[in-house]
Length: 524
Image 1 (spheres, rainbow, N blue to C red):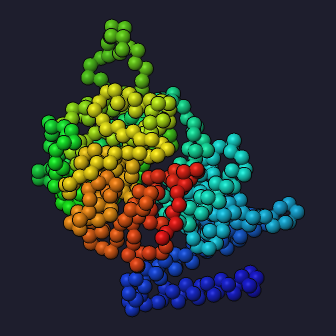
Image 2: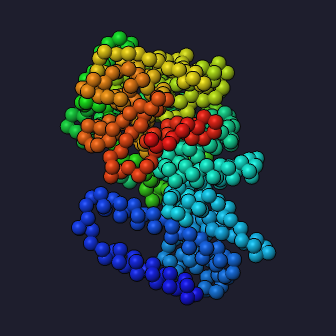
């Protein structure tokens, strides 16, 4: 080890020793939060040295020098980390570390701007993972100059937003550069299916599958209503089940109490929900691992209550049914969701009947192309939207893609009308507090300019959306909200959390930060 590196490592270790021995008892909460921020910034910078060291090992060392078969295994053994983690570190070093040409000339990192942001401690491993995922998905037809520009933009956005927001921005950028994706309608149709695995010793069965955009749009409002906090809990002596309501609100009646976040209403989410362990829920038990792909799920053999009749004795629709069992399961769930939503007897969710709320532009509707957005934040192809609109009573909000013109309904009451809620869901798409990812179905109406008790108006231009916990922040903490001239909602944090960050939540509107529709996000 060189004298310079040896001295730097010794100083680093001494600093860590002093840090872990420091007494945190004499610091105020604000000081502790600031200290945690500084330590996090320093921690993010450490991989810069690791990238340089790993790249030199890869260029000059042989695994036999360390008595192993690969450098990845040697690093894993020496540092007591998994081979998967060691491999990830070598990959990141190749992308973020400085390089040299064949003639020995220094070259910048492949992800130059991402590496620069990491060197300053402005982004962490989660940000880097999102950007690496983006370039792994980027199709080959995108030219080098465009790739460099996008990398610079994503690195800049990573310094301003959290990993979840950055992930949404990266996904949106990918759809802009590769609008057709790597799939077709036929592939999506083939892919759909719900598979039930073998029953385990404890009686449980693992379920996995892929659902269509239409089924997701149908399931979102049902889950928002029936899977709300405290709903349908089998541990309760008398489980709380939303009552079916025969009346379907046409927007002319008064809103029920508490729909503005002031009280509890049936079906309204009041607390943040824990995130599932994975996309399909809890991980499967060790003796029944999840298959790598859905093409070959481990299913129980089909059990029919009686022998199958000759298919040619059945009506034509039956013997021409070429769907797999998971596909039939999927379509059955879709039909059940559709039937429930068409009944109009599911009561209300945050002041609106439990139904599908979709927004799209007039231009896309006329073209019959593109995608619409549901209140749950999912994308719905235009063909599915047209089919959906023809089958059931749903809320469809249409606006102009150029002006964004929407409803403006002045109210003399405290609570927003259903029409106003539809306009808000279409405009805001979810909670407007920066960093929040809660969708429109789980958000409440919030007076952004002034609360009702302070003389605030219940006009759609003065209202916004906020999830239950963030809706109450304005009353219980020093957070405040206000409207910009362009209609965007700003959330002003208390001094302890104010680092000059964005006051606007762009998670639900990635188009504001990517491409020609970019808005000015300077903090006043």
